[in-house]
Amino acid sequence: MGSVVWSYARRCKMGEDKMMADGTQAMPAGRQGCIFVLGGARSGKSAFAEGLFTPWPAPWTYLATCQPHDGEMDARISRHRARRGANWHTVEEPLDLPRVLDAAGTRPVLVDCLTLWLTNLMLAERDIPAATQALLAALARRAGPTVLVSNEVGQGIVPDNALARRFRDEAGLMHQAIARGAARVVFVVAGLPMEMK
Image 1: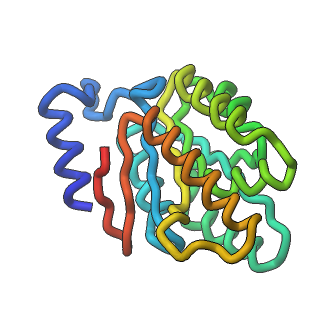
Image 2: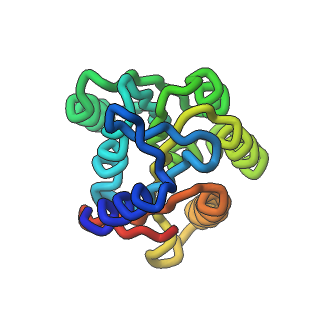
């Protein structure tokens, strides 16, 4: 985390992150307030993303895209909720992320995660490029900061079936679009964040 903390301190010194009189960070908005956090499974990306919210006043919105389909997923969700604590207000939305982002106003929002959102879009047979563009437009409209979390799935072997290959390709294209529009991109490996942008 040291490199990210150093980078954050450097931006504050340069005036890129405005500080309030009470010592809290002024809340950036629109795409200037968009941070994209990528990483593999169990990389520590969600915990890192949650830690980014401490400079901003609570409560914070946790926009969960997961749809629990079995007991194991229920248990994962329970562990995540217990870790987050009372400062988080959870909104569960599997498909319409722009609606929730618009409704959040100035409240900081964490979206976790975009790859589950992509899964939901594919299962619902939605137009993925159109949904991605709608998300980017909602991010540009945001009146408060937004942190988006997603799984990097394109660094392994080529999947052996067409559906998995399509998912990998759609995720890669979505990630490129989000990264282009985000103010910051952080890649997390083994709990260690690396600033990419």
